[in-house]
Length: 417
Image 1 (cartoon, rainbow, N blue to C red):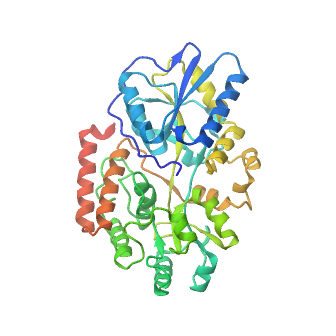
Image 2 (cartoon, rainbow, N blue to C red):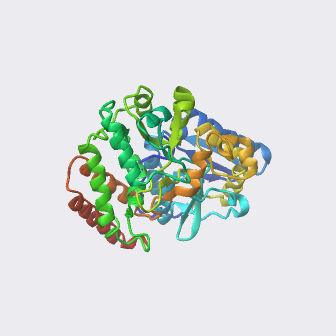
């Protein structure tokens, strides 16, 4: 599931001094040790860069995703960060604030990037990704047709009223114990990535984005309470399971569920199983517009890098369409570079392509998780609150408590300024 690592919280400013370089040889860290296809694509870029010139050399070190963030935080504390590393998108502001990352000067190299693939904080670019992913729902066209349900499009998505009526119609057939699979058995960052866009579509948010100093009113206002009440209602009405099955794709394929809420990474296996009967459904418009999460793994340069010229040269080289698209194809994701050259390399995301809908949704509906150093704490707090609400906790008081915790964390860290 690309882009859904547990957002890693820094432990404070990194020590000064240089690291990650020995002369013109620099070290690159990636979280892809357990992902051979994407790691091979990353390694291909490094090999090409090393062969393209004789001045610099990049050496790759790969880590398991589960321990990656902890390894970076520990290395920062010890003054042993590499020069180049990949970062989960919502973690970028935290690591920039902690001075793990240095601002990037990449010029026109990022001119064609999807906006959600450029990691910014305080107006500066700190990271850039080769791909993004898009949330979507999947169903059988035949199932929707039998229930008299309209298939929504990107230009005409379901309204909240339509979505609720569709779920009620599916439930009424009695064919499914819980017709909608929202992926509630997911863990970690999935909860914020998957459910905060629904909160935003209701009109709420994780934090006030005017200054990122408080969540009051955004996470516990009337719109947020309405979202939370709706989420809990899905459980009490038998529309979703409080804890869904372990394999959402298998449950949809085996007709144990009627609609699956997942991401673009599910499209290939579902298309293989369901063929032309597969319907890809865009995000629902609950009132404030359809929303999906934006931002996946991105690449940056550390503040302590002992050879920033080498790191910058590598990053610029890696952003060529052929390399970005190569990684995106390996990861089964949306190429971040939307130039004609890139789409020619993977036409499935271009006009008329089988995956065009994901590129459209990413372009039109993506909402970045709040770009603030407080995000890792906000995400953890939101996840706990959402899980408690789904289990039956009072919506308003649970969200009030979450707001108090978030505001206290921001105040303790002097506003993360």
